[in-house]
Image 1 (cartoon, one colour):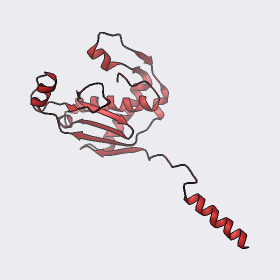
Image 2 (cartoon, rainbow, N blue to C red):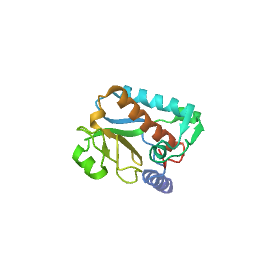
Image 3 (cartoon, rainbow, N blue to C red):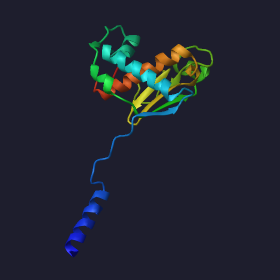
Length: 172
């Protein structure tokens, strides 16, 4: 009897010490925008459809170099990829003075640009995403620029989906 009690206690202790793998983060967003979760989910669904139809792997490279598009057929696996506590938040626009000094690019305030931290391929952008942890940041001035906001977030959500599917994200 004593042996059975010790075995049960030992088993409970082992299970309590990480005997099972951690469960993945729940699906959804950590929404720090002024838009509803439903609006973000709708943009995510559009990104899934876009990736299911056609994949463009080098839009950033084409902006700075004279190279051909690197496109792939759509990937239907995109329809099953969901965000997992993806942080979506605005970041204050960089000032026109800072942008001019750093890049020589003239813009009026608000610039619609934010600093893109390492390992981004560009110094300033309208938005950027990281995948560990999952986050998307965008220039705050785009928050209520209706169509532009949607286009910016859909592109960043496509990036999350492509990354989850294992595509090379070097020029996205």
